[in-house]
Image (cartoon, rainbow, N blue to C red; front, side, top):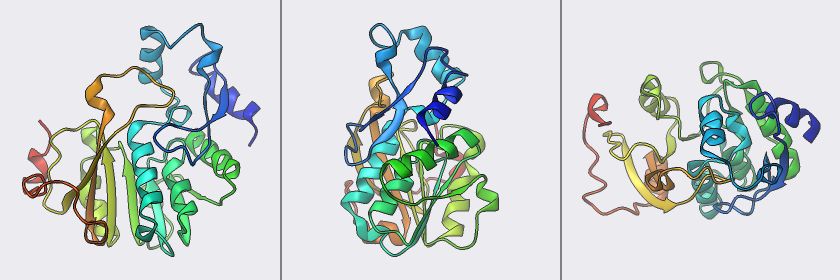
Length: 242
C-alpha cells in the first residue's frame, strides 16, 4: 500500500493532510506512516486537534499507550518470542510490528477500522516484517498465546473485553493512558511510563502517563514494576472506573 492510498484515506478527515515516514519518540526503533504536521502552519490548532479526535483517522497518529507497549515488548522479547500474538485495536500497527520484531511466531493486528488494517500492512512492510490482519476480535483466527491492547478501554462499551481477553489467552498485556483507576483482580500493574502522542496533539498532561497491566503468564514473566500497594488490584470490574 503506497503513501498515495494512505493520503487519500487521511484526507477524509484532514483535507490538507498527508502522511510521512517517521519514528515515534516513545519507540524509535519502529518507523510508521503517520500524519505529517509540516503540511500545517505550525502545530495543530485546537480546532484541528478536536476534529482529529471527533472523527479521527486513529491510524495516522501513534498514541502514547501504543508507543509504550511496543517498546515494552522490544525490551522484554521473551514475552512474545515464538508465540502467537494478537493486538486488538491496532491503529497504526505499532504493537503488532513490535511483536513481530521481537520474534513472535505470528503477530496478528486486529481492528474494526479497515483503514487501520491498511495502514498496519503498509507500516509492517516499512519495517520489513510480516503482520497478519484481522477485522474483528470476535472472528479471530484460532488460539493465541498472548493478547495485547493499547487504549481500548476509554469506551465503557469495551469493558467486557478485560475479562474476554483473560479468558481467551494465557497472557494479556494492556496499556492505558486514559483511566487512572483501573482495577481488576486478574490484572497486575507492571510498569508506568511517560509518552506523548506522535505527532503531538497537545493533550492534557495526565494522558501522557501510560500504565501497563498484565494478566496470567505475562504478569509472572515480566515481574511487577509497581509497589506492592499499587499491585493489589482487587476491585470488581463494575467499580474500576471513576
